[in-house]
Length: 348
Image (cartoon, rainbow, N blue to C red; front, side):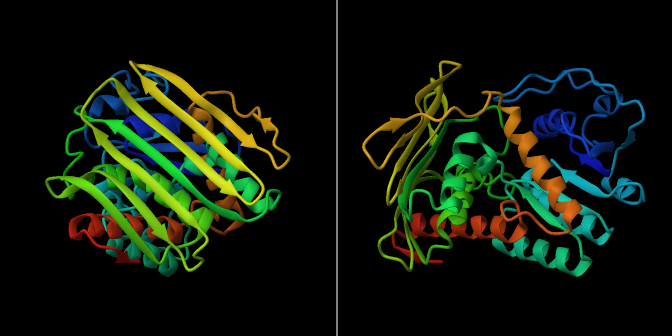
């Protein structure tokens, strides 16, 4: 049984709580919240987000409660900490937790800069503990289908793809465009696709990005990724638009030698719309639409945490959620920002 200390009882903490409740072999042994003492009583009714159910009153009977991380880390009954803190707090909380002898599952983005990511990876190696980062995208059914198609080789070699992830201005999220707090859409939004591109295609050697800025962060952009293999054609679009009518959209078109895979989903006027369900253009010209997933957005987080627990139990970081991969995603985002600012291609 893996005993978890859940740190940060905001929206992502609530989603993780729901996911843990569906799993065996793991239990939440403690929670930690420093910002709102009501949450340590089990009153989570004020928690709201852009997907999933709203917060509720939860039963914390038998679960230890802490109002600071240091006290939780001193508890020998905690095997792993799940850090659902604001991005600016990820690096120091991770390093502190690893030094205390705990495995760490840290929400994305791993950190706000590549140097902090390197420090986190080094701290895990020094402590002999496992660091994993909450890049849930590959555990979403549509993206999982693409990843498993790559691993199986069923459709031959991957030859490219385009990825889209755009939101309306998150006016409800304080500090979103602050490079020292959240980091804007590059680090909070596009990092999902940067991670998935790295997972599918390996590390690019160069990025060419064009976009517009809002203060010190990129607001909206397009990127071309160049690889050692010149036959790979990979691009991405991400950022924030000024209108609230379409709150979120993500999509992909992924090319294999023997198939093309399509998917397009958006939230328009507060309701989810699947413009293109997962669709496979097959080698013989037929079109198939695999039946995947239940449509419950918490499912992917359940699969993600199950992957985390399998990896901790096995004593080796997940090939999907490991710190090295998450660090590379931050490096890509950093280079893309440099390319937008300079107007030139930037080596990775």
